[in-house]
Structure formats: C-alpha cells, structure tokens
Image 1 (cartoon, helix red, strand yellow):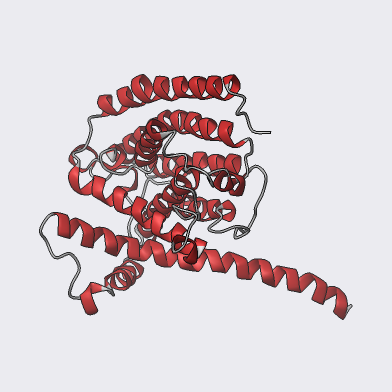
Image 2: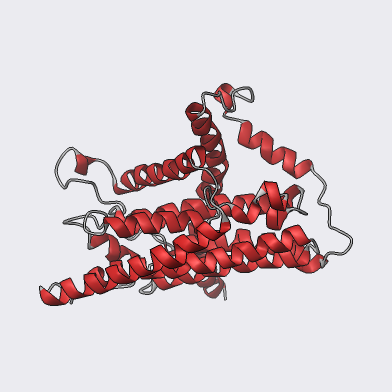
Length: 336
C-alpha cells in the first residue's frame, strides 16, 4: 500500500512543482510589467513614473496589490452574484492555463502536445466569455455595452490571427510549438512573413484590448467598460488576466516569428547565451512594443477598428495564405 501511494504521490508532486514553476514567475512578471509600463511611459512622456515606494519605486506593485486586497468588493444590488464573481475568476484562470504549452526552451513545456497551437488558440478564444459574463451580470448598460464591444472586437480579430497562424503552420507542417521554433533554425519567420508579423502584432493589440484598440473600456463614453462595477480583488483579477494575456501574446509572437529560444546567429558568442535568456530578451522586446503603442497612439473610433479588421487584415491575411501555399507547392518546399 505504501508503495502504491508513493507511486501516485510522486508524479502528483512533480506536476504541482511544474505548475508552480510556471505560475509563480508569471505572476511576478505580471506585477512588474505594470511597474515597467509606468516607467517606460514616464520616460517617453518626460515623467518620473513610480519612484517613492521602495528604491526606484520597485515596491510599487506590492503596494498596489496590498491596496486592492484591502478594498471592499462591492456587488451591485441588481447583479447576478454568482456570474458576477465567476467572470473575473474565469478570465484570470484562462490567462494562466494557456501557459501549459508554451516552451521557453527545448523540452521546457508543461505539456509539449502535438496540437499546442490549437490548444492555445482555443484558450485565447474562450477569454471573451469572462468579459461577456462580467458585462451581463453587472446589470449596467455601460458594462454591457463594453462587453458587446469586446466580444465583437475579439471575434473580428481572431479571424485574422487564425489565418496568420495557418501561414506559419504551412511552413512548419506541425501544430507542435517546439516544432514551430525548430523550423526557424535557418531563418526566423519574421523575414519571409513580415506583413503577417505586423498583422499578428496589431491583432494581438486588439485581442488584448490595448491602445489604440482599448474601446471596450473607453472612459469617455463607457466610464470603464465591462469592469465598471468591479472593485477590490475582483477588479484586480481582471487586471492580472489582462497583463498575463499581454505576456502570453508576446510569447506566442516570439515563438511564431522570432525563433523562440534560438539565437539570432548560430555562432559564438551568440550560442554561449542559454535559450531561456534569448526567449526572455525577445519577450521583453515585444512587451516594450506593447507599452510603446500605448504611450504614443491615440484611440481608434469603433468603425475604424472594424474596418481595419474586416476590410484590411482579413483579405490581406487570406491572400498571404494563398501566396504562401502557392510558393511552397511550386518550389516543392512543403514540409514532409
């Protein structure tokens, strides 16, 4: 009996350890991404950013977290209490489980499954449900309009994201994310597929409701959008989910177009740097671009947002899929 429980408990402990090895650094990265965002935006706009709480303001995320923990969670009288509470939990949960298939080095993934791309795309598509639940359960017209905006926006840009992913998969011949990275050993996909990289990055901004596509939470007309009625830790879960999704989309971009953990040149001294360090540097570059967009671009109108998604990105990405398939077939470059 003791041997049986040892055989069951040991794999369980290893699984929990692997999950914690992903979740704990991710939560730390989410907390300090808010600090980095305020510092970078402060530098771009000639401000200081956080500077008083701890050395260089490094304890500001900790202070923000303690403040949100101490705030009361207020549930509107007309709200559906169960759905109201479940919405931020679902949003935060989905932002974490997607990381199960993200490899930061060869073999460094919790689940290195053969359909990793499909899993990631499916999890990101489910994120809209938490937002719709929040808007509906709040019993507020501002929150409901913000949820409807977000649903239409995410569905619209997921079509372009899917076509961009298909373009990359045509060149790889596999749905495994590790295979996607290893297929870029000779050339990163950002070079032959630069237009698709631009479309993917812009669609990722819209998918995460970041500036200039932050219309679901437009302050001027919707007060705060789908989380208008949220406070305390329920509001914090939405914010944690948003920033975790930003890191996730940046990591997905690095895997699809920037060679994942591969160095830019397969020669010394580039090969001396470990793969996870290269992955982290590329991830930091993509996160900087997310912050850069917020600091410099004005918000789109909603009709401009929809026009860009359906009349520009959709036909352009569909055309690129056809061109890519034609080139691969013509020259016999289709992967085995």
